[in-house]
Image 1 (cartoon, helix red, strand yellow):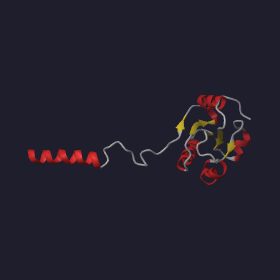
Image 2 (cartoon, one colour):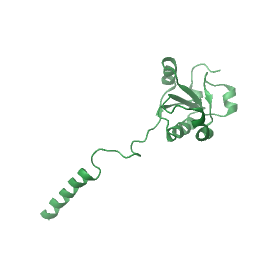
Image 3 (tube, one colour):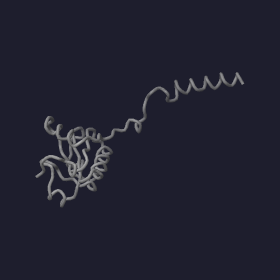
Image 4 (spheres, rainbow, N blue to C red):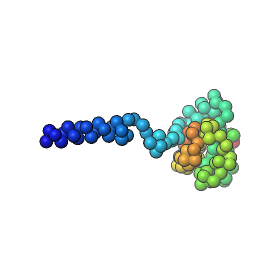
Length: 133
């Protein structure tokens, strides 16, 4: 039995040294995700940052009823088809919202899946305590 313990320990050490216990992550393990922030944090970013874009992930009708000033309408169900044509800088700060937060989370994940690296999702306009146009 002692003979096998030593063999097992050597096997474990070998696997760690040569087989993936070295702390390196696979591409899937280092997958970039969007950051979920509050409406207050989004407002703070809008006040101090420049060069950002606000994406409204709602429908045309919802957008026309009222939206955050400067927002660009790209409905959640069109993100995959339109983003790379309309959001050219994949490292640009992109702030995403919808009505309640569900569609903005879907849209934000779709953006990340397309390679966008600085996506912040801040929920829904129903929780936006600031001015809309």
